[in-house]
Image (cartoon, rainbow, N blue to C red):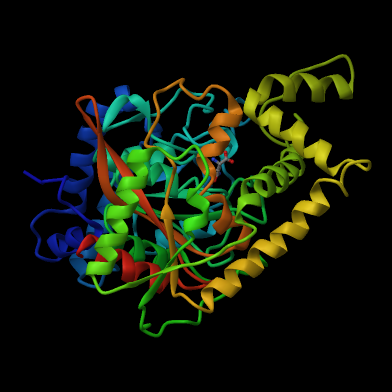
Length: 470
Ligand code: GLN
C-alpha cells in the first residue's frame, strides 16, 4: 500500500529509484483517491484520460536509470495554464470549450522531465478572487473543513494537494492566489519573483503582476518544482535568468509591526504570528521592527492597477477570436451578449472598474496615482531590505471562511491585504504552514508569509526549511 499522506516529490523519486513502486502504480493511487474525494471537494474540473499513458512513458525513463526529479510526479494544473490539446477554461463560461493550441512554457519544461499531469484544477474565474467561489463551475471545498473555502484563486490546486489528489500543483499568483489557498489548506505556496517564471501560455489576468508558481507539501518540494519551471524564455520578454545562487548568511528578519494596528486581523491569527516570531528567534534569527510607510496603500493600489490590466486583458474575449459566441442583432450586439453571458459578475465588475480608472477623465486621478505609489512602495521595500534579509507577515488576516460568508466583494478584497504587496513590488514570497486555529471541531491551517528581495527565492527556501524543520 502506498502512503500518499507522507509522500513528497523528493521521497517519491527515491521510491522510483528503489523500484518500491512504479509511476503507474503511484498515478493509479492518486486517481483512486481523486475518484473518492473529488465529488465532494471539487478540486478538479477534469481528470485527463491519458494519465496512465503519461505514467507509462515516465516508467520507461525511470527504468533507463537516468531520470529527473519530476519524472513520474503526478501534478494538478490550474485551469489557466495551457496544455496542448487539452481544455483550458480559466473556470469561465466564455472559454468552456476552448482547447489549448500549444503548451505553456512551464508545461513544456515539465514535459521534458516526464512529469504527469492529472487534470485541470478549479479556480476563481480568470483568477479573480480569493476563495474559488467565483468559479463558473462550482466552489472548491476545503479538505480540512468542507463547509469552508479552500482559498483562491488557485483553490483547486491547493485542495488537490491537501486531499492527496496530487503530489504537487501549479498555480498562478497576481495578488496572493498561490499563497492564500496554500495557507488555507496547510500547504507551501511560492509566488516567485516577477519574471523568474515564464507567463507564456498563462491566461493573463494582470500582466505586470502575474506569475506561475508551485503549491507543495514541503519547502524542499517547492524548490524542486520552482527550479524546474524557472528561467528566461524568448516567448516572454519580461523573463530573466536568476543569477544569485550563493548560500546566503540570513540572520535578520524584519516585521512591519505598524501594519498590525489596523482592524480586520483575527486575534487568533495575531497570536499565531507572535508564536511564529518566537520560533524564528529560537532558531537563531534576529527579529527587527521595520517601517514600510506606504504599505497601507497597497490594497488600494492593487485594486486600481489590477482591474486596469484586467479590463484590457479581457478585451480579447469578444466572441470572435476565442470560445463562446452568442449572436446579437449586429456586431456590437454579438459583443454585448457574448461578454454579458460569458463572464461572471466578478469579472464584469473588474472590467468596469478597470475601464473607469483608465478612462480619459480619471486616469490621472486613479491609474497614474496608483503607478506613482507603486514606485513609492517599491522604494520602501528597497530601504527595508538594506537592513533585513527577509520580511514576514501572516499570509492572510483570517483562516478559511465559510462558503458564502464573504459575498460582499469588498470584504473579500480585504483578505488580500498582506499578499498583494509582493506582486506590486515584484519580489518573491512564500507561505509556509504555521500551525492551526481550532474552530469548533476543526483545525484550520494558518500560513506565515516570508518575503525576500528580487530573485531571493533561496532566502525563502532557507528560512522556510528551518521553520518547518526540513
Ligand atoms: N485575491 C486576489 C484578487 O482577487 C488575488 C488574485 C490572484 O492572485 N489571482 O484579485
